[in-house]
Length: 125
Image (cartoon, rainbow, N blue to C red; front, side, top):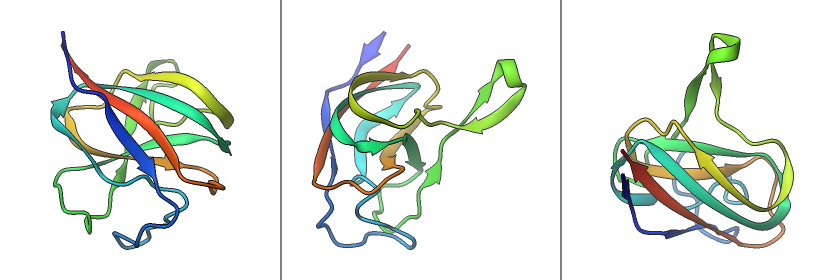
């Protein structure tokens, strides 16, 4: 198993808009994991209550509109958007189906009252 480096994943509510449809209170900056990974670990600090989702990109260009990560949910026999339930953070998350992406953003389902720094790490079998 290959575990990447832990990286800061900042939801910077003061940053400039980076892509069409960007809401700086909701999206993190683009994170380059350094290589493609199958899974993602996320450490979430205390946040303004929100559901968190993972968005991915094929390229490093910050102007690229990210795509929401979908995964196969066996019990429902359907593809669904990856998201947590709403909460105030202070948790660790293991996303078991990143699907080989290198560039990711974390999306917060509610505006954050201040900048939030999550920590993320890619995992490869």
